[in-house]
Image (cartoon, rainbow, N blue to C red; front, side):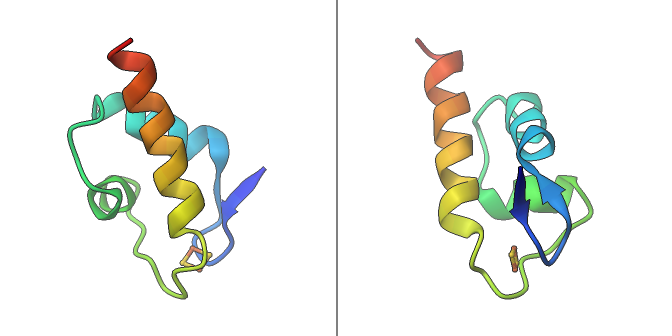
Length: 60
Ligand code: FES
């Protein structure tokens, strides 16, 4: 499932980046780690939810 149309980022990619960051970063840093930059911003809530899920998973 595509999360960010502007950067062609799918959910698995964002999830993996969040796992690699171990939840200790911002969504902007997650995008940066993927050589991406928010453009329209429509994806940010969904991407943030994914990162929060991964953070919760890591700290459960
Ligand atoms: S959909 Fe992600 S910046 Fe536009």
